[in-house]
Length: 568
Ligand code: GLC
Image (tube, rainbow, N blue to C red; front, side):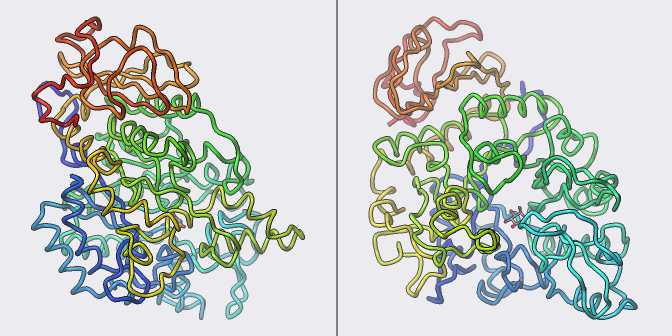
């Protein structure tokens, strides 16, 4: 990486992250649930892909009301995933391959089965009573998973607060002893060789005054409470800074304007946050679980707004899929004739914008949504609660599922498709959730065997990003921002200028002059010119100097030798 970069260098800016949903990645013991040994078996695959950091969704002991986002013991591994010895084995195997591990910490709430809560709910005299939030009477705030945010506690006759399910009581960050416990948990995992943390719904940890009226969207209401930044600064001073840990905070409800408060380096809080602006792009403003149409112009505007907000002030994170969203190709791309082209286009977008890219498991082979057929095939608490609500309103299953299938989190949680053997090679047993029936054609083995596949496109893009400082640290400048189908931008650093042109549509689009510039470094079609084909994506290098757009002519097969044959 060059010395010209003004942005301070960091490993977590230069590496690409791969997100694993352990329950669905690889089952090593045939119980139908993915596990830590299964992940360890697949590390060479991740090295081949070229990622440098692995984010593991929660693997702690949990009753799994919300698949591990309800933690019963922050220091224990869930038995279905293995034990601490398996965790230590995984860390060793990762280190041996130069991979870094990021753990998911769920500190806004615990499980109601955590010993703190069991004690706190049993008696008002419990030493853990103030670890949670209690009132004699509830207010009318609502919960993200539906229903009210307060549940009555029979043994003590009062009410406790939960932004998510009743089985996920919110922790009371006002209590210093609680915060000290949480920092100790972070030290515990850091001591086991973890390089960083993803902090679940961290924007929600400080609560608004009890009498605040719940207005606006639910995420914005719960985000940015009065003491939030005080807590983050304390966590940074106590743990993150002394142990040199990388952090990415999940930040629903946080706007681009507020983002620098979380990630500007001089504030000493977090390294990155995940915003929700594009996660909610295909949802109604009132209800995140209701689908709505989306527009490319909105996606471009959001991504540009976030780049501008953080340029020179803090570092961005980039994601197009995760365990809470349907598959990106089904949302934004194409699942028919242009499926592979679309998968490569979104890979290009993810890996050439400014910020650390987070790849969600399976996106690198172009996985799509599963055709769930009945409510019985869904597993997520959001589906269960939504269905209960629909039944109460006398809606029928068909009507409910017609909407829910467009927003379901279960699409991201179906088994990873390794090969064409039963259940995609995920398990020798019965998987905990159904496998997408397209596993026989869409799988890792087939994708790795085909040099023109989505997998190899991801691999080449990751290698290109690693070899190209302008793709990591370069400025981002959008071109023709109002174009309804084309997303085009340049990345520039010193005298290097890269042009990225993406046709985010299934139609041919003329780009005139723009098609004549530069040398193609990587593209998803052969040849180029003034017409972009469906979901065509090109990354081009401009001649010599910034601003000199005119030559040489775009030629997809003329690859700059410096790029190591990346454009096969
Ligand atoms: C985050 C997680 C999600 C979970 C929720 C409650 O949004 O990503 O999976 O359900 O927090 O913990």
